[in-house]
Amino acid sequence: MKLKPILLFLFCLSMFYNCKHETKHHVSFYHWKSQFAIDSTEADYFQKLGCNKLYLRFFDVDEENGQIVPKAKLNKLDSIQLQAEYVPVVFITNRTLRGITNQKIEELAQHINQLINEIRESNQLSSSEEIQIDCDWTETTRTAYFAFLTQLKKISGKKITCTIRMHQVKFKNKTGIPPVAKGYLMCYATSNPEEKSDRNSILDMGLLKDYLQNINDYPLPFDVALPLYSWAIASNHLGEIKLINGITEADLQLPDFAKIAENKYKVQQDCFFKGIYLNKDFTV
Image (cartoon, rainbow, N blue to C red; front, side, top):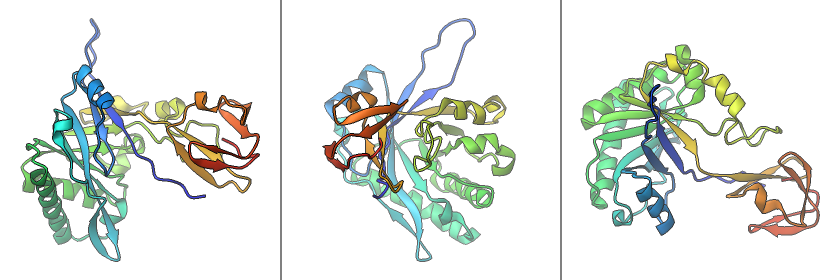
């Protein structure tokens, strides 16, 4: 049973507080699918919430056979589906940055900026003042990553922002502070769904509080990204798992499932569940 990739919808919640009166928070969304599709329900929510930005994943960058290549490029989109400022987001794998030379860093920034412009122009998207980079950089790749961000700002002439993982906040002295205008704190995927644990692998508030207890000391302005997705983790007798996306506990209130613990069920008979075949005695 293979671990299926997930598609994320996140929203950013501006963290500006006033001690005297309630402040309206500006809400934006991420679209993290290669196939661009906005249905009427999503467009309606977007409009009612007064949103004006959609952070749109344009493509990924990865290392393959010693070459740095773009992957999962966004398909052709119809921007008329949603009246918004489309902010390009590019995901870069950590291995892309390992051992990269200064010359390759500059070339990487040039190629990414060029491909962003090509996608924007081919889809007739108006220019955004911001480019966002998503990378789970580490202590060993921080120098290369920060140099890349500096080069991208120089080459693009845009405001460069980046995502920040929770461990990069807790261990900021090791991972460093990226040279960007703003950070977007990714408050999701707090643990590995493959681990045998009762924790909520999407968002565990205890872990969140532990990692962010010194968040006020982080020297960057930031927004917070929170998850808008759910899943069930189905396990077989060998401990292999499969993620079934879009599932809530209410979906398990069927004769095929018996509750055996908090948030945990046992399959009572072989069945199909949301298109996935589950054998008797699997746990969900």
